[in-house]
Structures are given as C-alpha cells and as structure tokens.
Image (cartoon, rainbow, N blue to C red; front, side, top):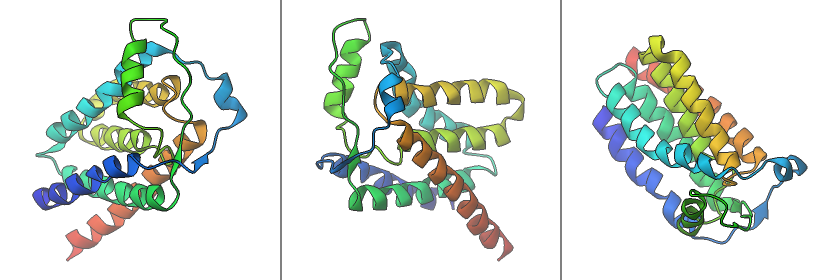
Length: 191
C-alpha cells in the first residue's frame, strides 16, 4: 500500500513546479506582513525542510504511520494543487540588500521559487503533517520535533516566502487532510 501511495504522491507533488511558473493574479498581504522582518538566517530551516520530508519518510517507512502520512500528503497536495490552479496567488518579494552571508541564498531561492503558490502554504501543511506523524511514531522526541516544526513555520515568514494568510491556509489544509486521511484509512482497514 505504501508504495502505491508514494507513486501517487510523487507526480502530484511535482505539479507544484509548472503551477509555480504561472503569473500570480492575487496577493493577500495583510498589514501585519509589513511588520514581520526579513531575517536571512531563517533560510537555513526553510531549505532544510525539504531534506526533513525525506528524513520523516525514512523514519516512518516501517511504521503503522507511513500509510496515513502519505495519504495525508496526497490529500493536502490535491487540495492545494486545485486551489493553485484556479486561484493563482503569490507573495511580493522584498528587495534584498546584501546584509548577511545568507542573503545570497534567499536571492537564489527567489529566482528558483517564483512568487506563485503562496496560499495555502505547502511548507506549512507538509511541516505540520511531518510533525504530527513523527510525534505519533516518536513520542519521546515530541519537544524536539515541535521545536523544529515551529522554526520551519517561522522561516516561511522571516524569509518573506509567505504572508500570514498563507500560513492560516496551510493550517486549514493540514487539519482537513489529516481528518480525511483518518476517515479513509479507517475505512480501508475496516474492509
């Protein structure tokens, strides 16, 4: 089952790339977004998020949590891809003065990762799903897990990759996908 779910997830997640090349039509910036500073060092947890997903998959692979985790990712990416397709939205990027060692990394990120697909934030729903299922599989590491998760969540704001409303959207997608995956997984097990 987990291999089938993984084979569904990979192409679904890959749809982010062509959708991210489109022009954004909507920008949902709130006044609070202007008060959040750019803190270049937060590029580190932002980029490590991608390695973290792989690590979480490896850590959960032989556990009972891998299928619900993959199913949750499939559901969350399905919701997000549909939204990104019909409502292309983005984040205006700030100008980047060379202020630190990390600023050039943010500049490269802005070039590679266009300003589209801000809402809902995939970084948020994926990070929360990783934290949720890791906490179930490794309850003795829960404080460490949620410290890392919180740092990644803050990184999307401090790198100016997302607006606050994108974070809220990511949280909603996380909750919906987690509950739908639980219902679907329970139905499959009950058969």
